[in-house]
Image (tube, rainbow, N blue to C red):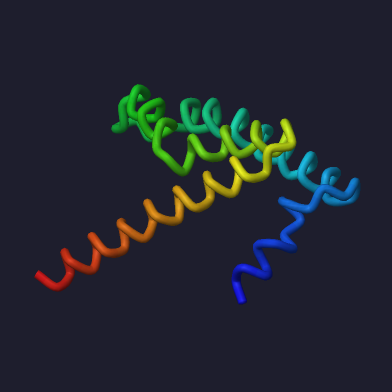
Length: 104
C-alpha cells in the first residue's frame, strides 16, 4: 500500500536519525544544484547560446532540486514531498504528450 510507505518515509519521520538523513539529502541536492549551473554554462555546446542554459535552469525539475533542498534543510518534508508530486505530474503529462504524438 503506497500510503503506508508514505507514512513511514524517512522524509516525514521526526526521529533524529531521519532528520540527519534529510539534512544529508538537502546538502547533496544543494551542492548538486550549485555545481550544476556553472558546469553547464562552462561546458555548453558551442552551438547552444549560454542564455539557454539559464532558461533550462528554470524548468520545474531543476527548480525542484533547489526548493526541495531548502525544504529538507528547513525540516519541512511536506514541501519536499509536494515538489516530488508536482514533478511527477509534470513528467506524467510529458509521457501523455509523447504518447499522443506517437499515435498521430
